[in-house]
Amino acid sequence: MRKYIATLLAVLLTSVPMFAQTVDEHAKTKKGAVIGGIAGAIAGAVIDNNRGHRSAKRGAVVGGVAGAAAGAIVGAMMDRQERELRQIQGVNVTRTAPGELNVSVQNEVLFDFNSSALRSSSRASLQQMADVFQKYPDTTLSVQGHTDSIGSAAYNQRLSERRADSVAGYLQDLGVRSSRIQTIGYGKSQPRATNSTAAGRQLNRRVEIHVRANA
Image: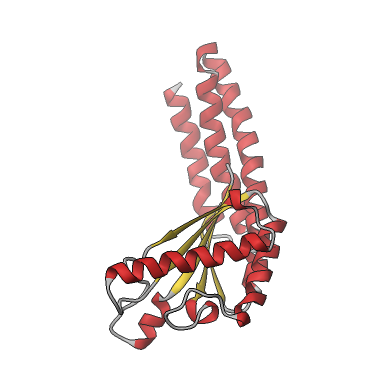
């Protein structure tokens, strides 16, 4: 059975680079289908292992088909969500995995300097984000606050937490379920750029929302 699974994995994994190189708008849906197929094939083979070699093969095939279908559905959902989030002004979206997105919002869009109170001008963007998140409810959201290196570590930690809480609270006020949201502040510990320049510090002052498809 191990040999069979190893052979199946080799075939499926050989397909991943082909899908990854696809440049059309469905590339990540295809990649999600491949990954889902791999997971499903392994699960199916393991579950049916005790029934004998033929059952293991059958379980791998059935599991692979089911996993591929589930992966394709998740990938398509995340493709659509990514496209819609990219339309929002002041928002940067990165696809970090077939079932994960990272949405980054610069603090200058959300907050005044040294403040965790949301600017009135930021509310339209957050409303659009909330609309997208409610449209695709089968995801969890991790709202993460970040700062530059100016000020003490303790102060920046508290500020990053308050800013994450402000964004999460407003999304909840707009109708996003609180059970989908968690918040965390990283202070100045995870810079995206150098803190030695004004431009770098601006990039580091941000709130990120990690969007993950539910399993």
